[in-house]
Image 1 (cartoon, one colour):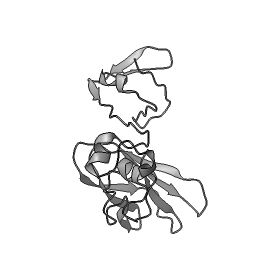
Image 2 (spheres, one colour; image 1 turned 90 degrees about the horizontal axis):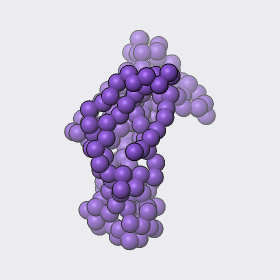
Image 3 (cartoon, one colour; image 1 turned 120 degrees about the vertical axis):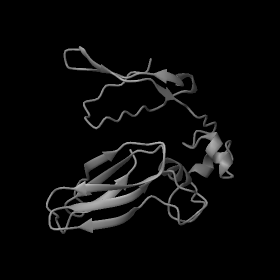
Image 4 (tube, helix red, strand yellow; image 1 turned 90 degrees about the vertical axis):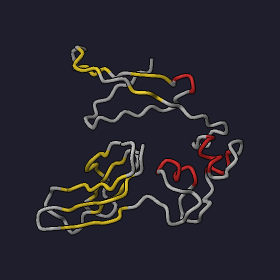
Length: 173
């Protein structure tokens, strides 16, 4: 049994150091502070991909893009010269052989009442849009975007009155 405790309200759970033996079907039980079960989810399948060289890229993905699943050094290389290491390209769901494929905000709009951040979301990836009200200020989450099984365009609205000095970034949890 995998166990994880969180006070987060965003509905996302991340497990670190999952082993191949943890693959299987799971249901999530949610309880309140008194321990009473509030809700049990439907079953979800956890697939764990082998990473022989421990470079944070699964063997199947490395083989797909022509990397060596036995070479841990290829994870920190930037094979397409776009400034993003190969393992980060895997996490973002971008193509490590294409310098035009990278995680980015595709459109930003601002009106009198709100700001909108738009980006292309890749299937099976979750995202967080973050903001900071000044350069060097700490980043705060604006909205979590859960993963889906298809690629799509996502628009996140910041309902706060637009601040001309507010900065936004797209992150992958």
